[in-house]
Structure formats: C-alpha cells, structure tokens
Amino acid sequence: MTGGLVAQSSVGPRRLTTQRQLVASALHEAGRTVSAAELFAGLRGNNPRIGRATVFRTLDLLVEIGLAQRFEGDGHVYLYTSCAPIHHHHLVCRVCGGTTDIDDAEVDALIRSVHRRHDFVLDHASLDFYGTCSSCPAAK
Image 1 (cartoon, rainbow, N blue to C red):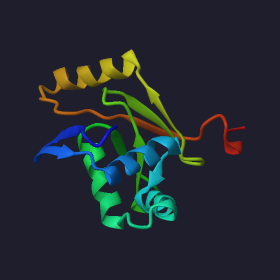
Image 2: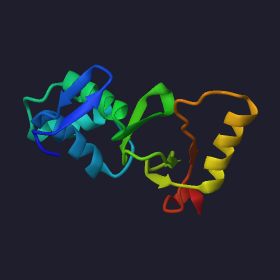
Image 3: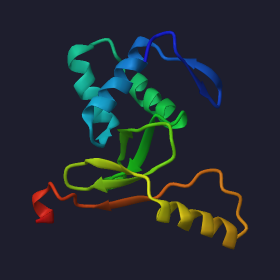
Image 4: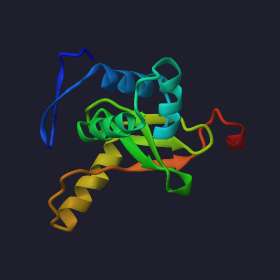
C-alpha cells in the first residue's frame, strides 16, 4: 500500500495515510488474530504519535473495504486478521489465534443452498470455524 492509494468505503473514497498503512502492515505481519488494543500496543512502541482511535478506525475501514475481517473472541473482544479482498471463510484457532483462509466448494454450495431454499437475498455470507489448530498442544 502506498500513500497515494485510495480505498472506496461507504462514505466515499478514503486516502490510505501513512498511519493507516502502518496499521494495515502490522495486522498483516501479525499472521494471526489480534485485538485492536494489542495492535495499538505493538505499534505505539515504534510510532509514539499514532493514536488509539486511529488504530480502531483504521481497523473498521479495513474490515469495510475487505482487507481485514473481524471476529468476536472470548469475552466479547473483537479480534482482527488481515485477508485478501476475495470471498473466503476461515479456520480460527482459539489457542494461538492463528487463522487459515479456506475456499471450499462445499461451504459455498451450502451458502447458495440456504439462499435458494429460503428465497433470501444475500448481501454477504461469512462462515468461520473455531477450534484448535494442529500446531497447538491442546490438539495433540
């Protein structure tokens, strides 16, 4: 991402400022789900001028434009992960916070079936699977 890029959001074009780029990069580099507070704490060490509100608003923007996804974690805390702007689903490890993108034809077929069976106009569908990944000790 560069400073000249513009993201289209529901309120119109939004410039990807240096601080927004820092948030997006930190989220991508985390490689797992992180809370906004955790991301802010990590960024604040090297970027003392970045504000907490900037991190929260940028995460909301990234979710809105499809470059991040928000999950509800334990204790009703939102967790975020970086993702590609294409439709996919996730496996989310509750132990380490790792996420794996899945693109599964059977899951997509299930969503289409629900849409047809209930004559429901779908704007967005998200299906995330929560559990323990094979890398975590609890899975063994």
